[in-house]
Image 1 (cartoon, rainbow, N blue to C red):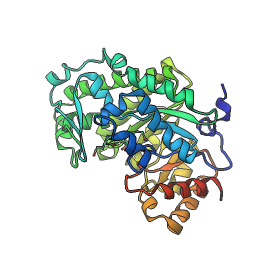
Image 2: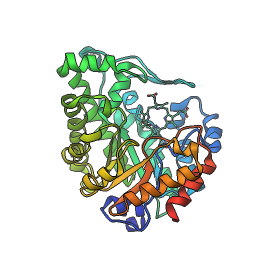
Image 3: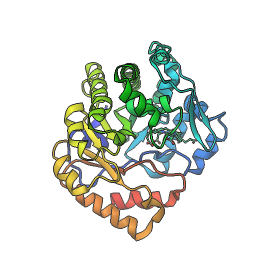
Image 4: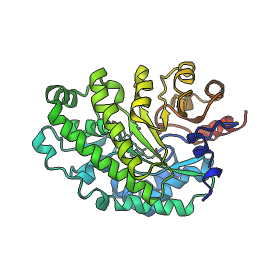
Length: 344
Ligand code: 1CP
C-alpha cells in the first residue's frame, strides 16, 4: 500500500532524494495554539496521551498546518514506566514526577505482563491516525531507550547530574541491570505492538546517552538498544528503526554498527562534514538544526538550512532538528523553515 510514495520511507531505505523530507521532533506541542486548545480540555498530560481521539488530533495538527513528510505518534516515553506499574504524573509547568525505583526490590515490583493491555489506547490512537493520514505521509512510532527512561524512573524527575542513577549503576551494575532488562523486554513488546497497529517506522529516543563514560555507554546505551532492535526485527524484519543517542559524539559510529539501527538521528552538536563522511556513508541520517535557530529566525536560519541541506546532499538525509522544538517558537517561523528546506 503506497509505501513507495512516502519520501520519508524512501530515504530510510537508503535512497537519496532531490530535497530532503522533513519532520520535526516535538512537532506537536505547546508552540501551536491548536495544541494548547486541546490540551486545556484534558485532565492532565497523560489524560491527553491516553485519549485516542485527542492524541490522534494533536498528532495530525502539524501535518495539516505544515504538510510534514512524517507524523509522529503523540505520546510520551514515560508511558512505559506507567505500564510497568510505576505511577507517573506530570506537574503543570514543572515536568514528570515518579516515585523513584532505587534497588532490586523496587525492580521486582515492576512487571512487563500488562504493557500491551495498559497501552491499548496508544494502539487505538495509531489506528485513528492511519485512517486520516494521506498516502505520502509516514507515521512514526517511538519509545525512549532503556537508559533514558531509567533516568526518570530512578531520579524520579528530570535531572542535572544523574547522581542517583549513575551511583546505582556504578555501585551495583547487576542490580541496575535487572531494571534495564525489564525495560528492554517491555519496550520491545511495546514497539512491536505499535508496528502491529500500523506505524511505518520507529524512533528510539536516548536523550541522555551522552552523559555516560565509555564502558557504561556500552553496557547501558548500546547493548540494550541492540537487544531491542533484535527483538523487534525478530517479529518485524522490515521495520525501519531510527536511533537517536543524543550527545554520543565520537561514539556515534560504533552505536550505529553495534545496535543495527537503520538510521541515525544526529544531535545539534554533531559536525556535518564529519557525519557526512563517517556516518552517512553507512546509513541514512536525520537532523540536525539547532532548535534555537527557530527563535533567531530570518537570514541566520536560512543560512543554517542551506548549510545542513548542502552538507548532507550527497547521501540519504531527513531534515529535522537536533533536539525538540521549544514552546517559545513562532509557528510562522516553522512555515518558513519548511519552505526553505523544500524550495532552494
Ligand atoms: O503539558 C505538556 O504539553 C507537556 C509537554 C510534553 C509534550 C508535548 C511532554 C512532557 N511530552 C510531550 C510529547 C512528547 N514527548 C513527544 C510527542 C511527539 C512529538 O515529538 O511531537 C515525544 C516524542 C516525547 C519524547 C520525550 N519525552 C523525550 C525524548 C525526546 C526529547 O525531547 O528529549 C523525553 C526526555 C521526554 C520526557 C518528558 N516529557 C515531558 C517533559 C516536559 C519531559 C522532559 C522532562 C525533563 O527532563 O525535563
